[in-house]
Length: 507
Image (cartoon, rainbow, N blue to C red; front, side, top):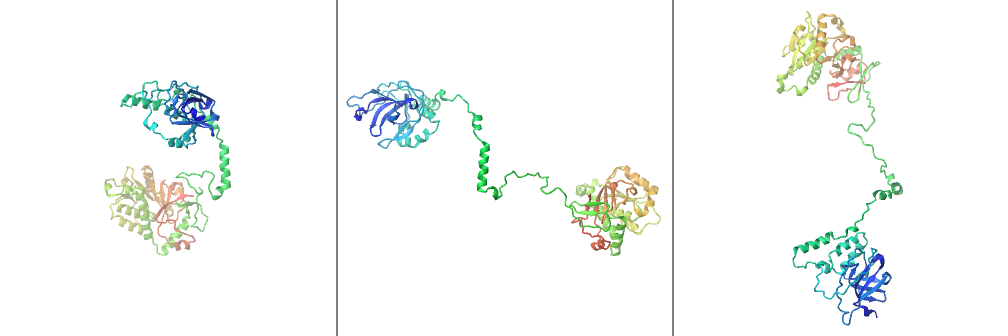
């Protein structure tokens, strides 16, 4: 009985969800309660698949539009589209009895059933369907239609595919190489979607963000870490502290090294750049230290030579070092004024002036005239006279313009009466008015005994408790052995390292 309806043109209304389909009946299965249509139209738009199958439960209304006459059941003609609906549908792939892919329901918009008259002349009408669409096999539909039906965007894709099938009443350019017709078909495929399908509401970002519960997510992460033991394996929970390049990751308190101890109470302490504490000693202990060193062979001549070398090295550094003292700057020779008294400290200054003159420094030595000079001064003056240095005995011969450096060796605690001499007062006044920086070599202890404010002071062996007028204190190594320090009661370890002159800082 069911075979009698094969070839009939029917209209199947599947309700508001699936819409209306028209086509020829190609198969009716009474066992599975399904009906198949060939060359179907959905809501007035030709489907891309050659055949669709419907279940009886999905059919709301079925209308027979045309019953085939005798001999027409084996020749299924195409359907003629009279009115195109504006809705889409999604599909799912079903399997009919022949094992071919069939499309079944997917919710979409509805449309009223359309009256489709019979099309008698198939050759007189040219439908704009590309050869690739005509050759699409059912296997392709079986593979891809199910995945496409799961996405919300299948409706638009279905409409864009359907736009390639033009209305039969419209004039469609034939495949005769007409360029404008080909471009028109491509435009319809790309821009043929109905503009009414574009949603007119904006996406609710705030509403969707409110759905994300951050507290619950972090609690879940913490629970997972506790169960898996991630934290117990040493992974830090907090962000590690970051330090700048000039910050110390260790404690900010300086490390104190005490490797030098003296037998008496220390009135003032210094420290080196490495943190080693250097205590000061009294003038009496310093004098005893030099006396014991001289008894063991460190004579005055040796001490003068060592002091002159260290003092000249420091002076050359203060004058600019290699940036100024090189063969290319012979026209910029620095000038040094050397003020010396008639005592052993003055002899140290003369030795320093000799070494400076040997390094191409212009040295002006001031030494007052005395009837009788110490032997150490006489010997140093004899060596200094062999250099290019200039010796003067009157303050009028000193330069009136500022010099590069003034070296002060006028004061001596054993010859305190010299501070009352006119030449001494005049030399102090000249040094204070010259506006040149002053370097004092082995200055006295008390501030009242120093008439010239120094910018730098150079101590010998161990420093004396110098005051503020001494400026920045430096310490030089004059070659005193360690056992000599121990003999006078000083536990000594050298603070110099690889240098002979080091800076000291107030502790």
